[in-house]
Image (cartoon, rainbow over all chains, first blue to last red):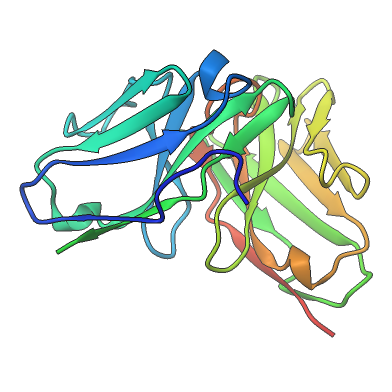
Length: 110
Length: 117
């Protein structure tokens, strides 16, 4: 069981906007930055969002992150077929003294 | 751009010690935190532990009794040892840059380790 809680699946049609939620506690999301990773099938995770809402160079602005209290969200607008992947949220946990991950959300583009 | 490459055995027997090495290229290992993360087949990501080039380490409490992470700055690589493996340790093991209050911005391709008798 993962420390951070994500819905196991999400879906949308091309062009739609979808959001993926991530719920935590005061010891992780509530007091630290949230990160999002995209994992395409058979590949390593790729950093998508850092420090709650910052995009690394090369990540399209269709991807955006937000955080409020002990929850965070990843939004993907203008959904494309190549966005079909697993998405993981992560945050530092002060109780664990280490990073924790969500269980992952499998995004399907219908 | 920094690149990471894991190497190690693909198949192990229960009770053996898992040893993996991550070679870092395109950047100096003596400038950041470096971590091991694993992913059981069909499951999510689990942080194993992190090391700074000064050899300061931080381990997941659930694995701490069995894990040792070390760094060799002369070879620009860091390593993972996990003792007394069981089938529950079967996973893809990733090495990554980052690990202390920050993100993992570069990852190795991952190496599958299967524990089976």
